[in-house]
Amino acid sequence: MTADTLFSKIVKKEIPADIVFQDEHVTAFQDINPQAPIHILIVPNKIIPTINDVSSDDEAILGHMIVIAKKIANQTGIADKGYRLIVNCGEHGNQEVFHLHMHLVGGKPLGRILAPPAE
Ligand code: 5GP
Image (cartoon, rainbow, N blue to C red; front, side, top):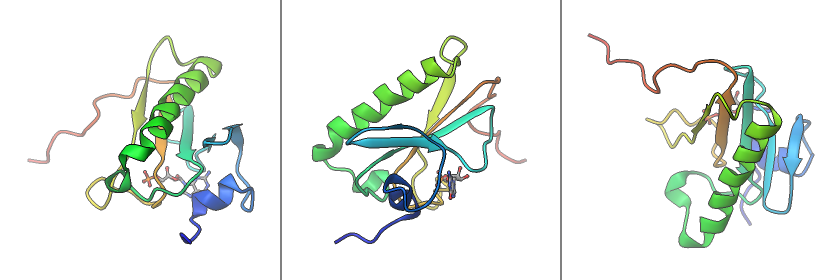
């Protein structure tokens, strides 16, 4: 059995979170430390640690995460102006929680995706 993660405990409602959407495949909740006016995390209910761990069996769930991101973007009023979906992976990707998640961020201009390299 896979060990629980912070986010699997949120999925099972063992840890409180502001859940904005849940179905049998995915859960979406407010990021505890928002980096933009809208910052929502969308996670698969099943534990997939990182993008490196996805398999072809996960294609439907990963597609579903994007469909749900789009719905939440519409519901929160950020769809027209646009937003960003981010999935961090591993050490260089700065992933902190090893339960795959998609950040939906928007509600203000987000700038370039990466800071220019330091001189
Ligand atoms: P990562 O760097 O792994 O892509 O992003 C992890 C995200 O999870 C961060 O944006 C962080 O603010 C968020 N986070 C960490 N702990 C919690 C928590 O206990 N509850 C919620 N709702 N978000 C969390």
